[in-house]
Length: 30
Image 1 (tube, rainbow, N blue to C red):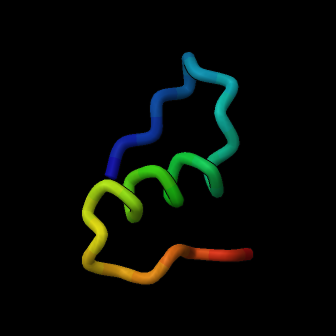
Image 2: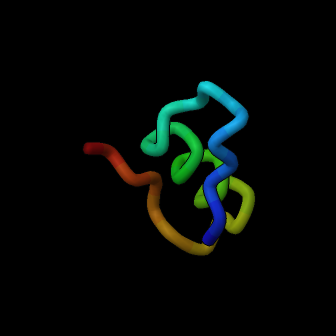
Image 3: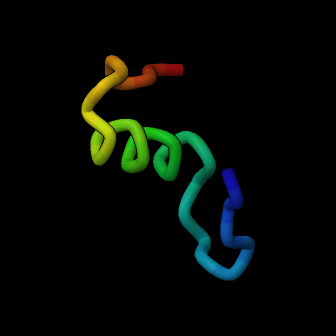
């Protein structure tokens, strides 16, 4: 998984978006 450092999006939120897209794993809540 590559996290774009350009975007100021938090890593947690980025992971949630990716997980939501896959929709095969439960949403990650940290």
